[in-house]
Amino acid sequence: MVVFLMRTNSCNYKWLLSILCLSGLLLQIHGVTISVPHYIVNATMNENATLSVDNRCNRTLSIKWKHLLPWGMKNIVVWKPGNYQNISKGYEDRIELYRNGSIRLSNVQFNDAGCYVVTVTDKEGSSKDGIIILNINEPIYKDLHFVAVIVTVLVTLSIILMFLLWICNQSVELYKIKRTPNANGSTDMEVTSL
Image 1: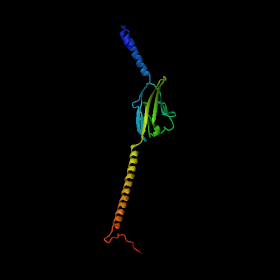
Image 2: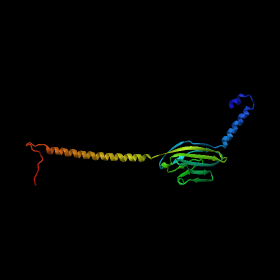
Image 3: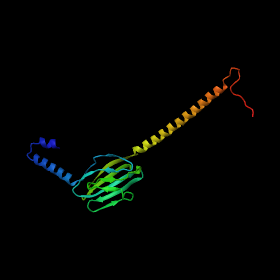
């Protein structure tokens, strides 16, 4: 359309182009824009996870966070800046809200993993959604602890087996010594009568 306007030799194309640019700018100013700096967030179990968003809306009406579960969406928090916050059960004492709409979950567990949807709505009713995927990893020290225990058990078993083999070897050697024939042809083993 801009190419068509530039090809016409009308004097008003500059004004029309300016009006289109200004109307686009006004639509962008009054609309809701949301950006998610990290679409995938990795966290370790029992630590904190920050789900960051940045919304650009002059008159934000509400910010809603939901957790997508296999059986549906679970509301986490509905927040109206300066007015009130409605935090769902199970998140009351472990969620922190930020002014830009971001949230921080403390003491995350495996059931916190999944897809989170944030919806920012302005007073005109226009809204935008952002999606963040939260991955929860098991702490590394638990894996290392498990490996250390297994290695210790295996080393202990190998020492016990080596000791048992040494005892068997010594018994065989002692048996061989006692079974060797003397110069007179008899064995060292003599039966003593009581």
